[in-house]
Amino acid sequence: MSEEKKVQLIDLSTTIKAGLPGVMGVNIDYQNHEETARSMSPSFGLDVNDIPEGKFAALETCTLTTHIGTHLDAPWHYGPTSGGKSAKTIDQIPLEWCYSNGVVLDFTHKKAGEEITIADFQQALKKINYQLKPLDIVLVMTGVSNRYFGTPEYDKMNPGVGREPTLWLIDHGVKVTGIDAWGWDRPFNVMVAEVKSGIKDKLWAGHYAGKEKEYCHLENLINLDKIPKPYGFKVAVFPVKVAKGSAGWVRAVAIV
Image (cartoon, rainbow, N blue to C red; front, side):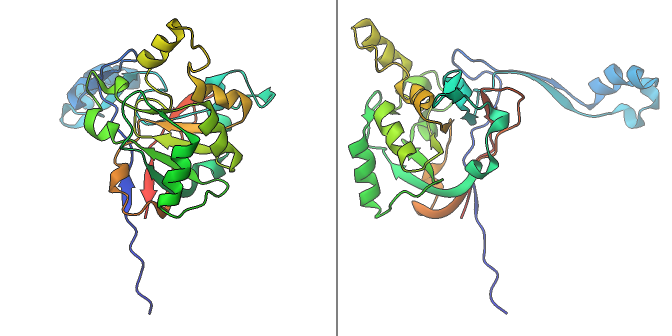
């Protein structure tokens, strides 16, 4: 008998928790077993004393946006149309886009606020001797989530991908990209400063590229450095199916 192949699963997702800093906060109301026994037993026509040990089902009520934690942005997030057609919402994303070959490109040398260019992508691919294929899931490794996730400065520490390199990836047949940082674009403080200085075409340019050509990207990935090789693995990034949503939370996993 041939030896069974061992599969390594690497969690690429950040944890959704209350108190995360930033403009899009998270609130989680936790109810323990005793609390739900008291609050829910009347809805079943029961008294709390009818519940075994007075303990029922722990549950949580979460208030958050679909863009908190590791999530997949749908084309609808970027604008109402994509490539001249109605933009897909997250519940319309083909599953084939969300499970495919992954490739990690190392941009940990890029500084906060810098743009990752087409030349940077070409150099990174040449360094690992890899050619992009249709439906590859391209994972941009900055190292920012590993170092800063959950801190006040997290949303200001990453380099980002602008319009031209995003379209360049799409032209290679890529439908899903991702980054281990707060956003696919450069930080808003950098882009806003440029807008105020008269440079307006750089604002959210990587996102807005999705209005021209259809694609999705993952944000708030983590642990990309734990993937042992830059390619030769699968990635599963299935989003939660939010009706008409602009994004969906993802438990992103690399399968080695």
